[in-house]
Length: 111
Image (cartoon, rainbow, N blue to C red; front, side):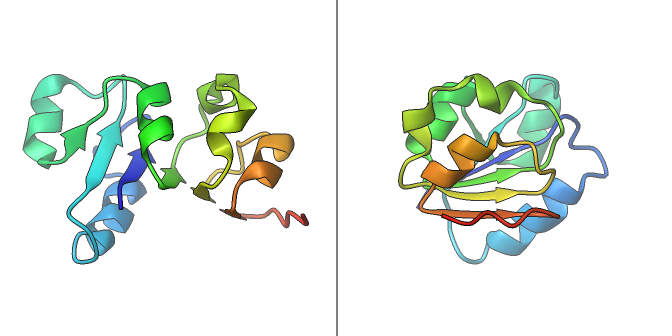
């Protein structure tokens, strides 16, 4: 399984804490973050996606740890059959309903 995580700043990030918990479960953890420098990404030792669209298309599980809204610019169909853990409640509700499983802090989505 591929797991994509997204955060606007990884230094002292809760995203890293969560992803470090997943390391024992899968070797395929990928990062997408346009803000973190290439040098910082190398220190993290995770594989990187070059774009958010590429990451979401290839990942089976998506973890969102940022309030940036760019994920909602992606086409609805890319969310079908995805498991999404939305730590900020930013995913558009119509997109969330397309996911095979959607979990969010402070939101209860009924299909």
